[in-house]
Image 1 (cartoon, rainbow, N blue to C red):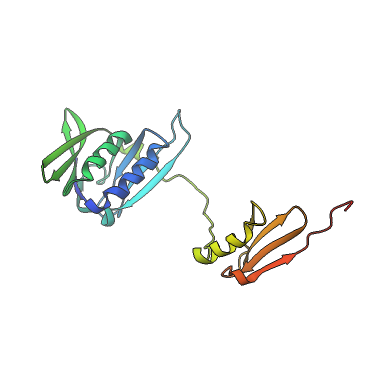
Image 2: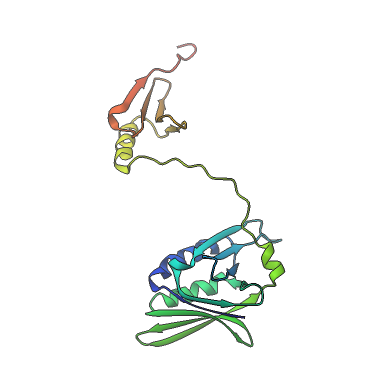
Length: 218
C-alpha cells in the first residue's frame, strides 16, 4: 500500500477552509484516496451513533495536487480515518512552506506524513490514521440529497439600488420568482400600501405602487 503526492502551495489556504468547515460538524473524517483514473479524492463525514450528519466533499486532483501516485490491493483505493484537528494543524504549518509532499508511511502505526520544505529547513508532521477495510470504504458513499434549485440574482449594483429604495418603507421584503417569469420584490407597510419591484434585471425604474385590500372597520 503506497501513496504519495505533492500539494500545490497556492491551494493550501482553500483546503484549510474546507477542513475547518468539516471540523464544525465532527472531529474525524474519512479520507478516500482514489485510483489515478478517478479525478477526485474525497473527504467524507459518515453518520455514527453520536452524529446523524453526513457530508461529502470531492477534491479534483488536477486542481489540488501534482504527481499523484497510489498503489493498493483494493483496486488502488485507500480509505483512512483522519483526525480533522491534526489535519488542520498540518495545513497551517504547510501554509508557510515552499513545497509540501504528502505520503502514507508506517512508523509503528500508519501515518499520513506532511513533508514541508521551508526557507529555514524541512518540517515533518505525522498524522496517525486508521486504515479502513475495502468493505467498509464501499459503505461510505455520497449521501443522497435532493437536486438543488437556485435563482441567479441580478448584479449587486442593481439589487442594492432597489433595496435602498425599499428599506425606508419596512424591515422585511418578500421575494417571489416564477420559472419563466420575472422576479418581484414586495414590501407591505401597515396595510396602507405595497411597494414592489418586478423586472428581469430588477432595475430601480420598475418600482410600482399598489393598494392592498381595505382593512375591516376602516
